[in-house]
Length: 232
Image (cartoon, rainbow, N blue to C red; front, side):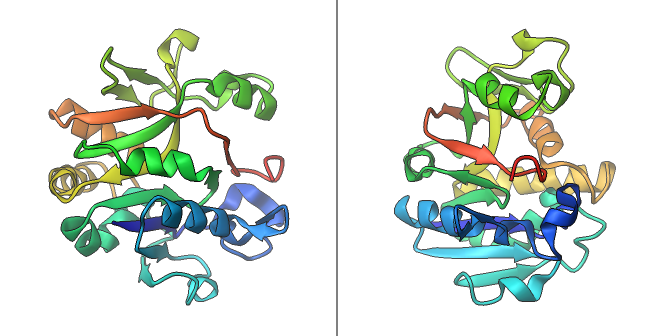
């Protein structure tokens, strides 16, 4: 198993707190965010970890086992970045992590143990955390609806109410090679039809609409997202 961290973006919503660093190098309790990610991924069984870089890429050289440079990072999004690690995803099971989140190792391990071709982690108790981050949790929330057997049905739209949110998508995935091959075909089509700047959740919805089964795994461990200076 391998781990992939998506760290190409500028993190512009961090403002001055970014200090011309990739967001994953900002520190929480004295440690860069990426340290927490790499520790959790390795504890979950990742033998190698690769970082997809872009903004200030030189600052991320040598931190992991490999780097993949998205030379169009300023005009693209995480969906496009993911294609740069296609060789890894096509040949081995991979855990894929956003670079602005931190999470307990057991959350990554839960994903690693999933037999599904594609699986994502979510927080069913999301409202408590979002209420601490936002005056109105719905301001930043997206739809997230799952079936009774925990397969994802809908993600990424603006919700009309809390009943459309069964949990919070965490930005942590698991792909088996056969799942990635299906997803990559839909991803490339989505990039062509929508744009290179398409959001990863939009591609995920495209994949679900085209029949891909995506397992949604509930997690109750500690985690967080660093999307703004207030979060930090």
